[in-house]
Length: 107
Length: 172
Ligand SMILES: [Fe+2]
Ligand SMILES: [Fe+2]
Image (tube, rainbow over all chains, first blue to last red; front, side, top):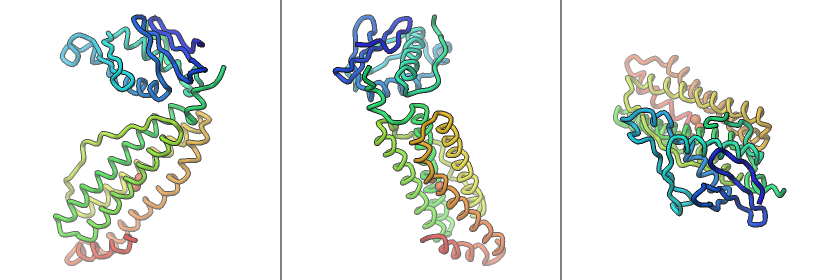
């Protein structure tokens, strides 16, 4: 497995022989196809991070994230979401599918 | 290192995001034209209503064209949420003026994606949009012609009914 990108909390690997990717979330490692990675990217893009700083819109500053067609469920705080966004956005750049990288947010 | 990512997807994700935005815009156009058809039906402009029913269908076809392009290129097409459709128009002239305004907005949006695709070196997306660039010329031209016809006909007396009848010329 090759490391594609490593953020503060997470690492994305490519497993060429299995034609898929793995994200190491710390507590567990999740296997993902490129489609599932795109779906995760879409979910992360849909999160309004400003809401985390408004107690009316997001009282506790958590996001519930379901991955791979509801196979996995994660509850992530503001810093973890920002870090996961950085991981995913930059991974697409490393993979040659995106041009614009995201600036370092959490580290 | 084997390039699984590139093997699975043949356009840039930035282009994909913009095309998903365009899917939403085409869906919004389709729903807007349906609202206009409803207005025309309720106000006695039955030929214009037919025109807008047909436009609504065409916009959905545009949406599906982009949706299928994202499927073909291994992207992640998103089924659009459509909200905020206006149903209030002050006159049939207002309806067609809003239509032209909407089409110009769509043209600008498509030109913007072409420009971005070019910057990204995403030739597939750029070439795919050729058809839309030409289609928008058609669409704008149609509505402009109708507005010219309205101007010539005038809205006094039987003018409004004549306008509605003449819209038939633009339904093929
Ligand atoms: Fe369209
Ligand atoms: Fe159109």
